[in-house]
Image 1 (cartoon, rainbow, N blue to C red):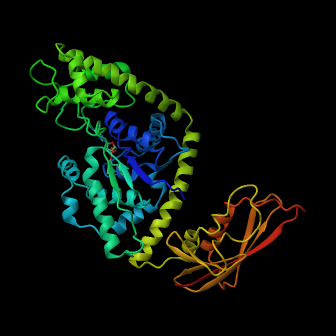
Image 2 (tube, rainbow, N blue to C red; image 1 turned 45 degrees about the vertical axis):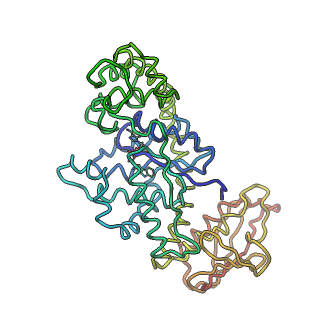
Length: 454
Ligand code: TYM
């Protein structure tokens, strides 16, 4: 497990990514991924809170992932994955829904805004912030880099974490970390070019309102030339000139200069000059992102490979929290899940040098240790005890084929072997690189796991 703090963020594939998503969120992820154990998710479950075309949603999901990479998200540093591939998001969301209340969800500004535009208001739109809380809390996230518009949702995630920790959690081992938002001082609220009092949005019906990360230089110049500005002619930075302020804010976010510097550069010049200069700065910023996104989209196999690997990693981490929560609310855990969260087998180093040896244990024989919320007793060679709900001792054997592949797990002493548990053992064992038997004959190995009450 990494000693770095955990960071989680995501974007909905509900439209092409746009300048606000980049300046308000993704750009900050790229800097923060070096310092934090980061997970970046394409939140497709969120996207279906409004009607989507299935083929377009599939394509956009991949395109959003490709854009993450094009912006500089590095899959060797961060876990990049698609939300719907990790079922724990939906499962935790349901549990959190049962700890949320109508009042707090009705107060969400984004729900009020979005539902005002719909004839029939979908339930998903209403419970959406709870799903967002699940996304964050599943990974014991400390930091959530987002734009200004997500602050209220983050507050709900914090409230739900505190509520569950207090109501069903163990005070000495809280269920959830209470996350903090990270809202950058610049770029956190880029406004629409058509209506500078509204935020720029990827799903705006007016195509001129939004600069997409796929827009060409010509389109960017055309859109910025049409940007709605304010009465008067002086270029000043003030709230009563929201159109001009927005263009200056965009320049500040991209160039790193401050607003005073930009205002003085345009002293005596006209709005048209500011629009054109902004267009050039934006086009230069977006060009490499657009080109790299196209390159990543050309090799969908490689992209899917990154996403599958990310989903596997995310899934394993999410299960650790989900099982802890399920136990806290009173659900009966299946043996297979208990075995999976033990992580015992899976933590055998997966290196070619790994020798056939005892199950990984910590400390002297008889000592206890905790992992993923479960207690273990070290029983010495070839044995690990998991202290949990029911008593069961499992002796299992498996065979290493001459190719080094693990086969035929057999569980002794179980009258009706549990197929889930077999599958789980095989999955765990598949992570261990066993040396090929020297005599080129299949080799049988045995381990013991004892499960007994706490
Ligand atoms: P979404 O997809 O609307 O936007 C993705 C990110 O972009 C930021 N953003 C903006 N920043 C500056 N100016 C703008 N005009 C602008 N518009 C959007 C958003 O604040 C966001 O950071 N619910 C989220 C997605 C989500 C999420 C999560 C985020 C789901 N689960 C967990 C963080 C953690 C959303 O709809 O973002």
